[in-house]
Length: 58
Image (cartoon, rainbow, N blue to C red; front, side, top):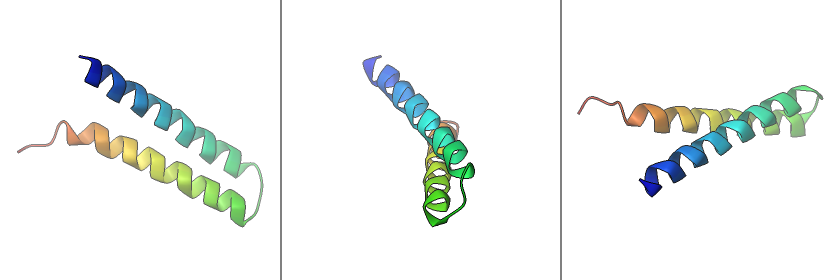
């Protein structure tokens, strides 16, 4: 029970951080902003992977 609550909480936090990185990186132009958006994209893809991993056909 506690493990699932912790897992969901971690996924929500990573999702919020990922979206924030993409939004904040989009506001300015430069290599640093591109890096921030890439980190955000990687975080969002990781959260999506973790979510879909539970529903995989074995």
